[in-house]
Image 1: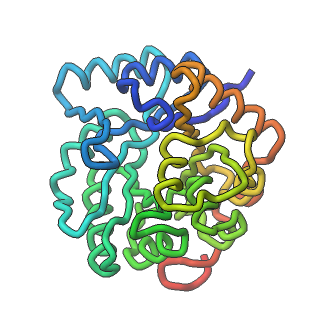
Image 2: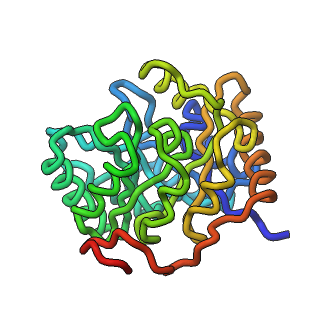
Amino acid sequence: MTRLVLGLAHLTALELSPSALVTAAARAGFTAVGLRFVPATAGGPAYPTRVGTEAHRALKQILIAEGVRVSDIEFIQLTPGIDVQAFAGMFEAAADLGATSVIASGDDHDHARLTAHFAELCDLALAFRLRVDIEFMRWRAIGALPQALAIVRQAGKSNGAILVDALHLTRSGGKAGDLISIRDEWLRAAQICDAGADTPSTEAAIIAEAREGRLPPGEGSLPLGDLLEALPADAFLSVEMPMPALETRARITAAFDATRRLLDRHSRGTRRPGERRENSPTGHQT
């Protein structure tokens, strides 16, 4: 039987160290993991590692032993005062682990400055053969797909792209159809989960839902089938499903099994890689 290519985002089980996450992910059937090296919030959990340390060497060995790869590293907040070059060590570790991308958020309301910092981050990442995916979240400065698209387009970097999270897309008022006109090169990865039909009424409740109130894919009301069909066929898919009500390993297993059932019911990417799309960096079709 062909092994399902599917990643597990660290937020699904952020209580686990990278090594423990790799082992648990492999047991459940995942082929890749995303790792959180930098906190997404002040004082939040994270597991930084550096090339040359014993922890880094041990993590590489576990990845090899379990047959799991690192898909992405997170989480860089593009704040007004960010020192982009300070992330060189993180990028070196990410590249050494075989990661494909790093994930960033837009946390600066000065559009020009944010775009410049994103472009600088892409330049630094390119030296390590990494892509930078900007993830939009309703409560951050870059809170919706059009804003993220504008940053990527205006930065004009070959390794700049957008990470689409199914929950964030829906809660920010977006639809799967909004992805259709975006060029494939800018949609390289997506995270899925499920959630209830109603958008929480306050920003605090929206944040709480995103961080601890998600559901297994296919067990809620998000239009995940439409999302899967709207993505490029070769976009990498991972599951981000923080759900503390479930025990850690049961949660990871539920995330994999539910996603496998969802993928059995829906086609992934009805558009082909390289298909003609709008929104090229120059504003012309590609």
